[in-house]
Each structure stands twice: as structure tokens, then as C-alpha cells.
Length: 433
Image (cartoon, rainbow, N blue to C red; front, side):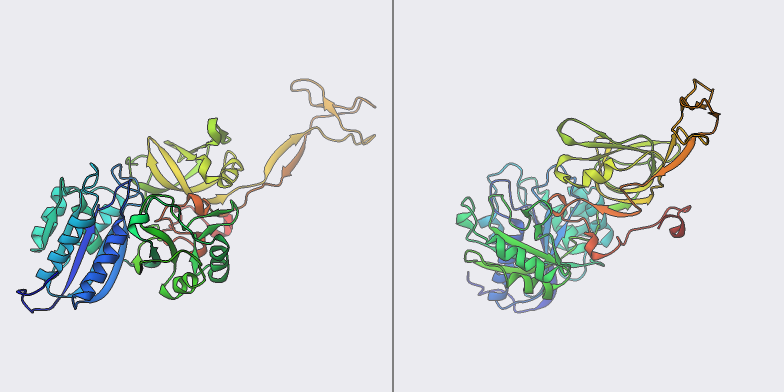
């Protein structure tokens, strides 16, 4: 496109876009990476390319609920025009649920609190527009414009715990055909770079995680701590030819969606960390879903480990009444869908049984209710039972769902102890570790 006629002024600015994809094709990250390329080709300088994941529980999201922010130096009029035209060209506007939003901030960015609420809770279209108007940002909405929420949140976000993702794209016209990414090379890439990278594969369940199965331009993506690690892993992957590649700074793998909560004030659609005590043995229901009930002494909370979490369900099944836990997950339909759990205490199980006869060494049997025990061989009686302690299959520590069941925002334990970890006031590391 011709840029003749635009003013030559060049300034620092942020561009945010969201909701350009649909379940049938396209991908907001692809449009963002392509926009960054077009801006560079027009003579602008890309300072930062960000992928910001928002609240994973939003009902109208597509796939991972990702919004894109680009920090760029150049002409704002030109940049806004290029972005608008690209959205018009590539966004799946024929889809009822695709409602793009675009924002360009020249002098200042929206408050970080807006992004925090978009990541942990809910924001409105009206609130996003107001945030734009407050800082004189230019913006555009397509259809109902819901994407303006993610666009504003993406440019407002402060990534205090940033990670990286290397995204590789195929020809968008091939989005419905089978991808070719060599699984052996993916396993080698993870083996050579873990824990600098993670969730490329799920070794325990023998599954490839980083290759999507949805009809969009993404060929595969490598997540990791920084650009160096993900680049090393990407160079080990054998695949069909790519048409575009980009490295994003992101809030993935940071637990940014989790907030501290108590059983009295959990809100539908938010994600929480909640302490409690197991009240009853976990129950495995139809479909293999496991139900765990915990209490804080006043209220009760139902926690769910669903079938896709695979071996994580065995961790939940190993819990017993009286165990103290710290559960993390999304609160939906009045239950917490578990993403990770910290076992604070899991004492050995107390087993009460019949004692051995002191006279003949044989095991006694019950002499009747409240009558103690009797040896059927020699007739010796005893009122004291034999107390023993059964070793548990579970021990204090963190446990998480496998990579194939992990949400984009969930922080893998290979990155270290979760940064949100705030022990209950009566928690003593010496008592439970």
C-alpha cells in the first residue's frame, strides 16, 4: 500500500488487537505477527511483540483467549491505517462470534489495573472504550467490538513475570490440511532444553502438546523462560516449511489468572487459590472424574479433577479426611476445577486392629461390642487394641496436571514454586515439609 501523504512524524506507540479469529480459522497471534512485519516493511521499528492471555473462563473466548500488543516507533496515522486494513482483510468477520477491536496509544497506556481485571475477572466494552478516551487513544471496533477489551488489556498489561513463546506459522490457505511436524524432533527439542522450555510434549501420556489440532495458521509453538531457550528448541524441530515466525513476550506460564480466595466469597468465572481440609474420601464418578470435598471449618468447597487430567486424579484419590491442602483452579458451576494442589499435611493413616496374645502369640479376635479382645486358642483377654500407622502414597508438596491438560496461563512446577504461594497463617513449613 502507498504511504504517500502521511505526516513524517515518528513517535513511540502501542498497538493492541484482539478477537480476529474464530473456531473455523485465522488466529489473532498470526495477524499480530503479520502486522509487525508490515509495520517493519513500512519503515517502522518494532520494540516489543507481546501475547497476553486473558481470563481463561470467558464464555465467548476462542481457544486460548490471547490478545496482541505491539510496541513500535513510527508514524501513528500510518500504523493505525495498516492495522485497520489488515484486520479488514484477514479477520474472520463472517463468524458471528468474531468481533475485532483495535487500539493505538501514543502518549500513555491504559491503567495496568484494567489488564489485571481482564486477566483475572471481567471487563466491559464500555469500560474499554472509556479507558481509551481517558488517554486520547484512537480505537476502532468491528461488529459489536468485544475485541476492544482484549486490545486495551494487551497494551495495558505489566508483565512482571514474563515468559516467551516461539510461534511458527504455515500458509493460512492450508489451515484445514494435516500439519507435518516431526514428533521425534519435538521430543528431542524438549529433552535438550527442558526446563528452559516446557509443554512441548507430555511424556507421561505420550502426547505432543505444542502442535494444535484446530484449523488455523499456527504450525507449532515452543514455550519457555526466554528467547534464547525457545530459539534453541525451535532450531531442533523438523517440520513443513513455515511462512512466518515470531517470538512473543507473554504472561503464559505465570499463574497470572490466580487470586487468593476464601470459600465464603468465590465468584463464578474467576480462578482462585484456596486453603482447606479434606472432609471425606475422594469419589470417582462416571467418566473418571474425581470429586474432592474440603472445608475451612465453616464452609465447604467441591473440587474437581476431570478425566483429561489423567494421572493427576491419582494424586487426588490418594488424599484422605484430615489432610490439609491448598487448591488452585477455576471456579465454575459452584466447584473448583483443579489445576494444581499443594498438600500441606498428609499424616500416616491410623489403623486400629486386634492385638497379639501375650501368652501364645496368636492374633486375638473381638470379644463383642465394648468387651475388648479374646484369644480363641488360650482364652487370654485384653482390652487394648493394636495401633499401627499406614504409610501414605502421597506426601507434602506441589502436584500439577500434566502438560496436555495445562492451561496457557498455569505456571508449570518446573519454573519453581508458584510466586503467588502465600501460606495460611497457621502454616508451619517445619510441621509439614
